Amino acid sequence: MALSEQEILAGLAEIVNEETGLEAEEVQMDKSFTEDLDIDSLSMMTIVVNAEDKFGVRIPDDEVKNLTHVKDAVSYIANHQG
Amino acid sequence: MSTRPALSAPTTLRHARILGLGAYRPERVVTNEEIIQHIDSSDEWIRQRSGIVTRRFARDDESVVDMAEAASRQALERAGVETGQVDAVIMATVTHPFQTPAAAPVLADRLGMTDPAAYDISAACAGYCYAIAQANDMVRAGSVDTVLVVGVEKLSDFTDKHDRGSAFIFGDGAGAAVVGVADRPGIGPTIWGSLGERADAITQRESWTDLRPAMEDPGRTEGLDWPAFTMQGQTVFRWAVFSMAPVARRAVEAAGITPADLDAFVPHQANMRITDAMVKALELPEHVPVARDIAETGNTSAASIPLAMSRMLEEGEAPHGGLALQIGFGAGLVYAAQVVEMP
Image (cartoon, rainbow over all chains, first blue to last red; front, side):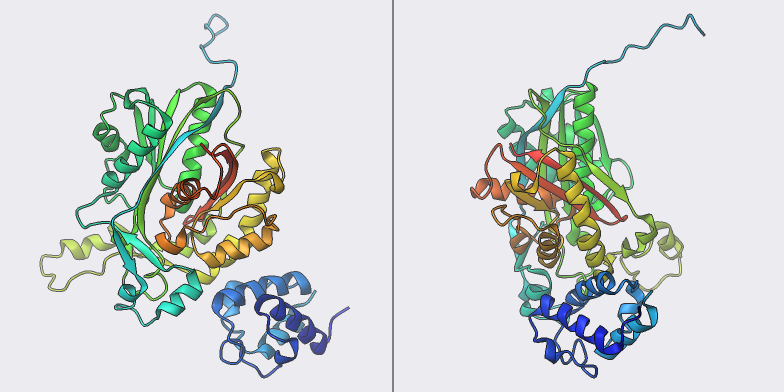
């Protein structure tokens, strides 16, 4: 069954928390990964791979640069979940 | 055809191990402050993204063969092997600046060897592990008794000091191993492979033939851009961590041991962040020491594993005779992993 955007956000926040130690509540839709959450390109790759495993989606390398904000990642996952 | 005599061939396999390791680090220490004279970056940024504090650069007049010679002499001495006993020399390098001849015959001559088989292999950062795999099989099969394996790079020659993505990563150095006949298995099965569809992830910018028309143009008035190496950092990071951890695990299984039996983990020193993430993905037991030579050596491609292992042995971080998991991965993309008994 497809997950809602809120469920994806909660799951993504857990992944971000595990990689960076940021509180899950900090991970909100309008936050920028680099500017607001201070996540660098290598941490972002780890988050992407863990998100692929968790949500069963494939996020190609070329797509990652388009995921600048949390809402971009959530909507990509929502639109591509199996 | 039925009367053709059978060819002579050995019928039993022998054992092989690494008898001695050697290392050579160029004298000049290059700080992050020196690197950021040419790129928009900072010491803190470089340390955070790569774990690199300093690296070594060879002198302008110091070649890969010079560095290889120094590492080889140390390895031979530690192995107790005379140069005349070496049957084959395999050099892993991507920075020997001649298309031909290879560097290995020149090295063999420098070392005063008489008539060894000598050739280079091009497997980038996996080159040393590829060469160890070959040396092991050659000794085991009886083709040779003793092989000198060298991983050496002068990456400063092929780095664009103005490229923010790679200028801080690379360093120069050489590591050597003498592989010979043993009374027990000292080199486990190699897990290796390639992913040519990502050949663009780490590559020389232009081929030599791309540059030829401009080089031969008699009317040329401007200099040409040097075809330095470039790297797609994020792509390489993702592949290195998440595809290589399973390869490393398979090498441990193939050796018939468990991760808890390891006395050292010596991954190619690509980037401290890759090492950290790989250790996590591998779920390596905490008691296994991890090579972190990159902090003071940078990424020396084919030289990084023997350099890092030499440091761990010299500093007592890893025991002589202990088991090390080593894994090389890089441009190609290519990879190789095996468990070895440290000399």
